[in-house]
Length: 462
Ligand code: NAD
Image (cartoon, rainbow, N blue to C red; front, side, top):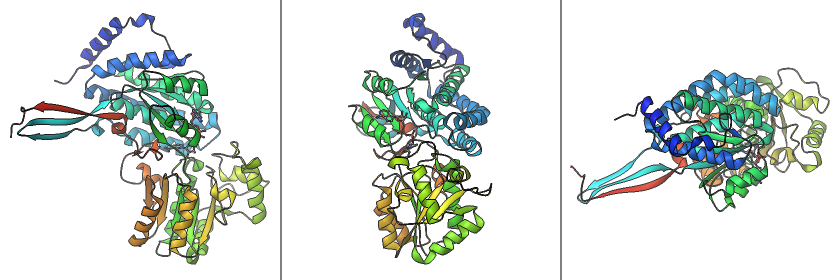
């Protein structure tokens, strides 16, 4: 029998009463001063979620999707204002993508065997309260996408967001709790602290009520989570190369690569970060980038100046991350046309602007002798992250060779990188791509544990 909203309210009341919720820590729709209080509240919410039907979880998710769409522009603007990174138009699209294409409870499926000796099921059960660490590059997108997937799996979630994006992350956390309350669910399905720090992150990682931690960010956070002694889902850094061979539609490749590279000012971890092209097509490719895709060709002197500013003292300058091409050029005294989308240049793979994951629209093009050389250079540039790679080719043997050699969670063929997120491509969306630990593109089922449920010698009715 499907559970009604009034029944859920009764469950909420019953559990609240049993737990003397009046003594519970309070936080406005999921936001607490202390990490321990946040975790306690998420645990209480989880006990309520546990008793809900899948249908009720889905009702909350439907309400979250609606609210994301209503607030997409607000969150996009807030993200850009707070972090200074990315652009509002693309961030609006990213929020709609999360709302439309993040899987919900339909992702929770059952495997069954039935026969003379009975019925055995593998059910996907919740972990409980999941800890999640989120980046500043897609702050609200990751909070919303993680919450939908984790809740669909029957969990609640404690976030330790990037401090540089806390306001935007809190807005998203408030939003999911408001959606839950509106749909008859509990408050605190997602929680956080007012001031996330490494200390609050450590409290979360060590807490007895957190059995699973999902880390979305650079190498430091993934290593920290994988060293925590808990099960970890590691969605780490990338440096995706786009390979172009002589069989590609070069004009289209130029357009796809620039579109992917410039999306949200190159912030997505999957975005094209450099190009490796076989020698015979390099000139044509760059010609189309320049003449049809609003790219700016940086001279040797300008490359050097960009390196000095972007990698000041050998370290990635955060003030340049997620900035648009015109702003980056203005930082080195170049007044580029207003429609400039991407800065391009040809250079060796060791060039610091090519080998580093910059997360800004600067795209180096590396020349390869032949296809095998292109694959070798691309694998080197991906740094063993096993994250994302792209190729423009009509030769399936070449595509297969590259796919095997680079061994990434994502490989887009003949399209812009964002088609891997279901944007102009098939498949679902996520902003947590578990490159390090191998789950790949996470979804609700990633946040569940497999439980075998056996009925011996009965319930086979064949
Ligand atoms: P970041 O690594 O600086 O921060 C990510 C999160 O980890 C933040 O919340 C930060 O506070 C926290 N953190 C960092 N070091 C930590 C430590 N030692 N212990 C605990 N927490 C720690 O990354 P960012 O600048 O916010 O995001 C960009 C990076 O994230 C890029 O490398 C990008 O490729 C990667 N990323 C990966 C994915 C993916 O799905 N694989 C998605 C988005 C971003």
